[in-house]
Length: 333
Image 1 (tube, helix red, strand yellow):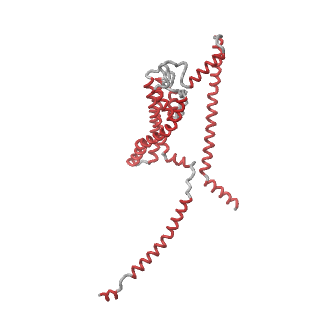
Image 2: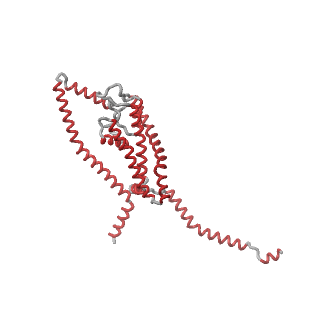
Image 3: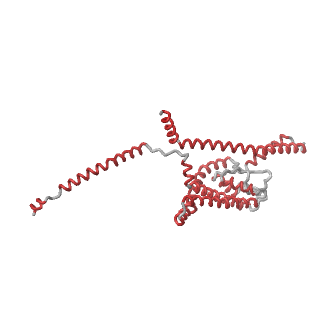
């Protein structure tokens, strides 16, 4: 008897804390996913890093051997300055006067990467004033960008998702859930085609050192706002129409980010994903004041029939007693 009571109480406890257990499993799954990614990246990239280090060491040793007049300290100092300049977007291999990092189009491109939190890192403010302005500009600009993107995505969702789904559901009689799933998949395929595959083919043509995979990699890293900065278009020394090219990339990133948010919001509105998210959420608890109001209303509703019944009886009694009798009518006559 005690065992059955204890088991039933345990089951009730687990059922009442179901969302908490789901959340714990979600956290453990995320940690395992991070560890899985670290293991794979380490096993794949570490051999390439070791080979690159060996090649650089061999190249440096050979250079010092061929140029005995240059000391190793001087070479290290020169390489350090070159690497520091490269971190700010100034390359010693591309120091021509035609490619400036802070002309208008390049600055516009930088501002778009800052406000969208992409942040390639290939260009950074050099002066203290520029760094201070970047802080203030981002402090107000990032919330402004979120407001702008939210408003644009909300308006686009009405015409791209909600109205088409409702129209097909009402006029064709197809289940709304099925229409939403098919619509989401088609919208995702269209976004991949127009903002990943086609731009990747264009970038692989315009950028001499990029193949299709590297171009597709840049599109994904950019539109997902990861922004590693290892591939940035328009940085080649012989880039034709560089300003126009940078301007086009800026509009591509903004428009592509809006489309990605529309696709994500479309999938988030699916009933299956809504139910999945609710598994990990805490249930809304009613406040003490609301419970008191509900209890008061229940008491009022429970006592209302009695009062109504009593009022009806009183009303009937008054109405009957107030009726004139037959004798009264004769007296009046």
